[in-house]
Image 1 (cartoon, rainbow, N blue to C red):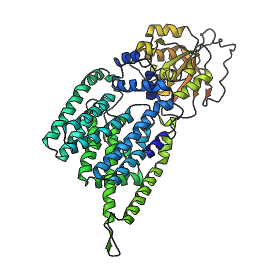
Image 2: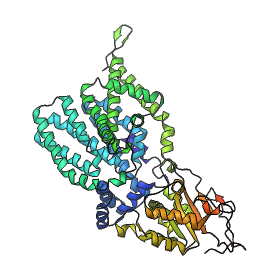
Image 3: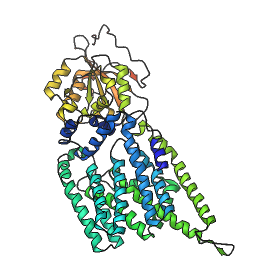
Image 4: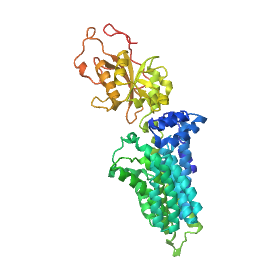
Length: 533
């Protein structure tokens, strides 16, 4: 737990939220009635998490506080994985399992994210430990804590439900008596009845995951690398070898193997028909990999303890052997962590996330004048203004019809296409916040409002300036100043000007500022260009 807490706190304030984190940040700061209204249309699957974060951010709304619950949850998970290992195979295996879980880069990634996945992993680890205790206790009362924890975990995120399948397979592998099945069945049935309403509501919101695709074998390989303390090289192959050896430990394998394979297997299979799979949805299955690898390391250690030296058999319980195995284990874990240190460092950079909304706000502060109109393409880009309002407080959101909290939406309601054309027709300059791919001239968004944005920009405006932050992210978020095309009487159109896309400037080359520290290109009026407000 100390190792996990240290890794979780290391670089926690990375200087910017990405899109999903910003949703948590702005939704959790709404009133409870506003959150409840939102859940009727979107994000019902995250409802309990938003209400929990509402209480957390009421203490102090900041990026660090936003991520602290995930750090604490990951720390608790490391301890629970260790406790499982102790109960199943002894203290050394438990300690090794907990540390392996803590140093795995995927664990550190989600320990520093303001979303529910680390909390779900803690719930599943706790439920699995309670399952083992209930099996050992063989009493009816032992299933109440198990059922309560599983229910809370599945309400926290409904895609934790496949863990019930993993636990059922565990009971089958352990060959438990009928009374144990009866106790578990009642608990699982109660969980299903509680989660069914959430599943029913979230099915009507399935458009939110329409971007997911059916996973192939490449995703299986990617998940295997993510579940290893090292995604490539000797650490990866060594972890796989230890997991294979760990299968010989019957009791540990009966718990760890179903947890590792069943949830990803169920989601991947279902996703062949209806895509629902993403690696982060099965973060909780990583605990199975850590337990198996630790069990394999324990078995290898016991085998080494039976090796003869100078004609004498050294027992594993001897002090010398225990000390030697302990030092070897510490060195192996340290080497595994150090080999992945560049991955951990990279993960603590905002550039490693899909986007960095703080950068967008910083660009807006530097470039926008008071009263400047701003257009977000697509509308989800408004998350930058919701997460970091300082950069946009002087600007005028020209497309916005109703704010996000008042409309019960994630990023607000925009004007219809006719109204949007009228609004854009009344301005001579407009700042556009967009991902570069969103301005692709070959892109045809299904939303008529988004199509109207691109069409008006293409036919009535031209690019004057473009600003992109020097720290590259996966899809550059840029800030462009579009100015209205000059009337033909004042400035005849140049060759090909009418056929250019929103991403290409007509006329003279567009002055581009690749770094926010550079001065803005001059925009003073000239003899053949009207003055812009």
